[in-house]
Image 1 (cartoon, one colour):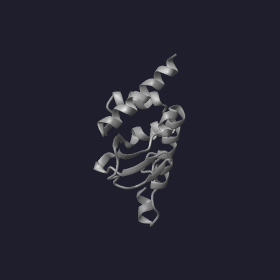
Image 2: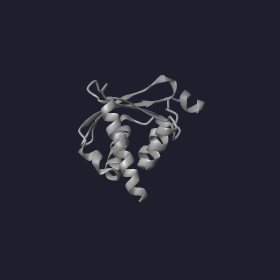
Image 3: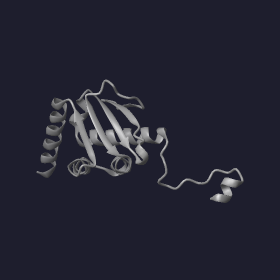
Image 4: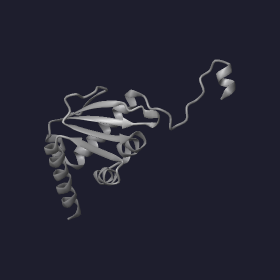
Length: 137
């Protein structure tokens, strides 16, 4: 790596290195679409979500996610009614392969935090509980 720095080439980044904004946007869209497929009621909710992807070193990019859609932008999301905060590493796993039960598990273990309008938080919690009950029966 030192040789590549000395001769002007950029060193190859490890697989776990930072993901570009375009790739992050695609991951967010994939996660939202997967959740909407599993919980169809999510597709009917008009909502703006502030998504914070916490990373090491204090960097926490903020994304504005509008549903239905989803419409995703890197924006402070001042008009959000729901705020979701998740460590970037957990988000990457959940976005790629996570199902609703994985998101619930991450929430219950404190890896995902949800805050905002109490009515919206309660409504979405009830929708998820009903969907999980349907899946179990």
